[in-house]
Image (cartoon, rainbow, N blue to C red; front, side, top):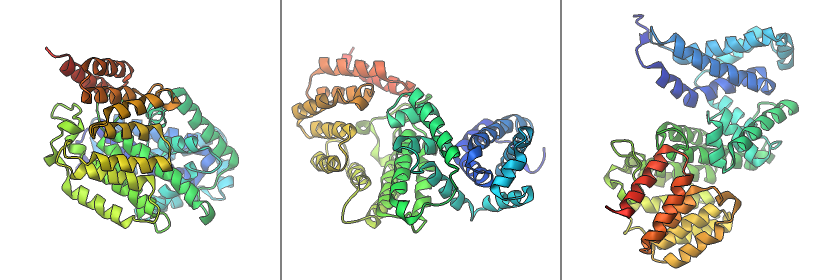
Length: 423
């Protein structure tokens, strides 16, 4: 075997690259050839990933897999441009020669230049020419490697709607010939707010996946936190909201190790072994929240504060649920999201106000975002449990089981129903 080749399994490495390497390849190649060729670049990067699976089966993974995939992706983009007889036009539009573009790409792929290319691409995807949800969907798809179904769940829309949003966004960016630059100061706050939403949704998808048999994907959580940290390192983007989002992610990441058991099944908060929680990460999260303090707290400040209340409680019974209700009260003055109403109702129920909590959940049942949201029935089931109404709890959990999409969600609800029905 070649001494520069390692025998690591290619499929796992390619999956890793889709989350951790494809973003930089797409960012740099699109920066080189222009946003009008984004679809082409994305396709060729994906082809390069698939080519790696075949090429590395026998000899193993090369010593520099990123460089290998970059060369394949770059060459495939150039070949495609030549085949379609648009190569010279592409070079003319970029005002560069082929040699100059290759030199720039090599420079932009260097360790010190990559953050700039990634940040530029993030803000292109969050361009004001796109509507809010399309900005989020676009960034999740291009820079985070999300599937259409993952985007759909994160945005609480259908898969078909998510697909159309991405397609329309790409078309709009191409038509407007958006330059891959960082936003001017006048647009910074609005554009940064969208980036925050994207990273928030991305982390949530990793924390509770919507696809496959894995209940969580710590690699997705890690990538969201990495991109957030990238923002924190840039003077213009390290705002109080950015730092609070960093605190929120780390406080949840600290509990990842206890969220699944040895068989890979989900472990609910009440049953988690809290000695497995990463106290170092919790402490770092507190530091980031302290650094983020501002006169007017954002939703990220309040959500991070809620998460840290859980982190410091010795168990569910010892949790300060009244304080959590107060935080949700404040959150609802910022954003009247039915998700906040749902979570506040659960906190109310845990603090003893079951009847009020049930009424709150019923008040949002007709909300558009809640019509196919199985966690509403899960919340109803939990509240009926707290109210000692086993029949109603079984009915609610059964409804949730029918609507749950992911296998790990179905398995968790099956377990809950078995416990309630008894021998």
